[in-house]
Length: 451
Image 1 (tube, rainbow, N blue to C red):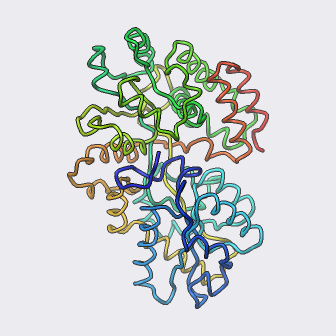
Image 2: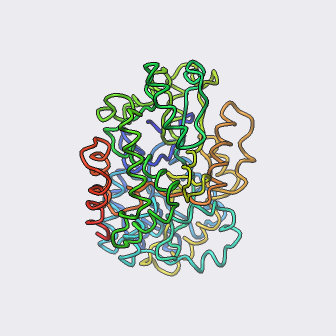
Image 3: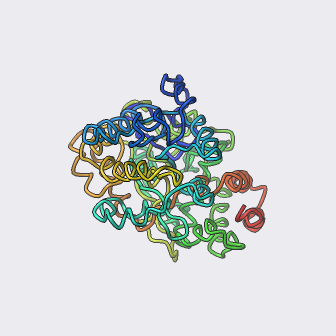
């Protein structure tokens, strides 16, 4: 799962852990460790009238982020934006320290969700209501579903930007032809396919279960398809006993039904997603299907021989659950990346930052750069820039999911605060190992709601 090459769609939901894994420390990263706060000449372009911007390193993303700043600075040389790059873990620690010391940059890059909520609760970032009121055209350009992870208590505190990465249901067309079955159109179809593949000695689904978050993707979709996005929203909002919602219990029950039917490859709990072993099971025909992030397309294209180029990879949004309340167009994953403005910055810095947010992220050149890197910008009409290359159908598919999603739920462990997220992942692993049932899962998670 390496998001560093052009053919591998990057900005994965795993960006919290693996965005820049394995990259050497750059000069920019080293210099960043000594950078000053928003009021300094060093961090705001030297004149104190620009703005500082901290974000992540890792190619091709860092080049596109720098390009956005460079293009903006050409037009606004009197209020330049100075970009400082950090590797992932260093960035998270540096931001935490800077916020605590009142030395945050003017512009903060983030993942939205729980991380953004912690900034809001601490009074560290600006309410952007008036910004979006003044920039209605910009708001209309962004996929509406991307605003969920930018919103806390019905107020928007971040600009959704960069790219969108949905979770996708993949299948191996050759394996389906071999067994003589069709791709699932419903949850019942999925359950019916399990014995058909098992009887042929083919795992119905590949799964890198040791990584835990891979299991979580299944629950994210089942919660949505059965109960709608409101079920997890209640958890995010901290409602008491939200995990005990009857639709949540049903989703957990259906999940264990699939596990009990041997729906996943044997030994899935010892397979890691970071090794790409789960992808290999799909493209070698040892597994028929896989639920995974759109970022895995590039890995299968690079490593799977002619699996992708030969037309053997199928993909679709997760199907409906019969009788469910969720809209089958809904998606889960990474709805966008997010830019916020420090509430501690000076008025001049805030003004420069807001101009940067308004003018830099959705120019045609920046959208084209994201598409050329194998990603879909979180922008209406960006599909017009896709062209007719070998990945055009795949990119258009991603665009259609993102642009048509009535709801795009952010990955749970990014949406929730770290303490809750760890308890969640631990209990998901236990649920998949069948060591706890739905009711115990709900009880364990209800105990940490709001922490």
